[in-house]
Length: 68
Image (cartoon, helix red, strand yellow):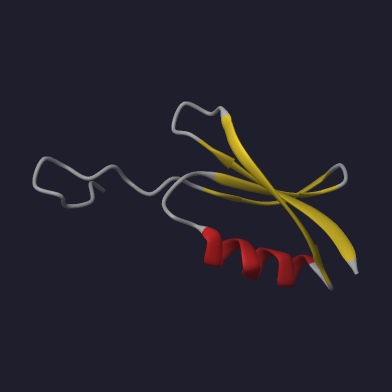
């Protein structure tokens, strides 16, 4: 088992939260992180290794549709 940190950022790049987790592999940690995505950018780390980044979802336009 390995320890991971999932950082959640606001749209200006400031850390807004961190979740500590323990998973069997990088792939399992990335799968868990995917379930936590709510459109904000995130980064998954293990000690000093960046495992994966998750881009922010596009901002909705005035009619609530996602921009591309």
